[in-house]
Image (cartoon, rainbow, N blue to C red; front, side, top):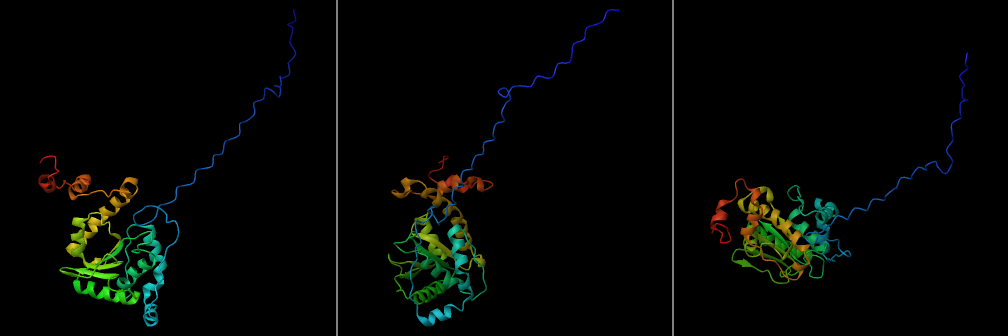
Length: 261
């Protein structure tokens, strides 16, 4: 009987150290820091330094002012205004919203020619008596002359080129929008008594919801810092025609810039 030769089991060949693949280290990439959130009413840039206006008030007025509930909310209100384009302030009657919020803005540099936001602070009132009386009251509290805190109503007003805070009726602001759609003279607009929902207030809120984004976009273009763009109502409606179902045919048929004309 022939014996079949058997081969001894060979031990497994161990790979040399040079053949052992070395595991690759995972690359850890440091994520790029998120860009800073732009703040500011229209410039979209962080202010280079803090700016404030010192106000010397009458001691009696200052004592009465500290009793108003809105004074304790000044910091929160100004932070909200600084970081947002639109802010809604709700409070009880007599809390000091009408007289104090314009003063908060003025002390923060709004309306000051040397500050980062040199445009006027505009405050609309539904009635002309309120515009005149509030301008006189805020002027007294800030110890400023009437040419600095002024009012403008139909056929009457004392606003000048030196005006920092301007009280006016909502119809006056609508008229200014017709002549200057971007409201380039203003750094902040306050619509008082907006809860009354009259026709002029609703139109103003709708227009400002378009004006503020347009101002933000145009401020990012360096060319607009030298040459102010001319914006008319018709291209404005053409650009946002998708907002209206169906589009505003009246604008298309009557505007001279319409393709059908």
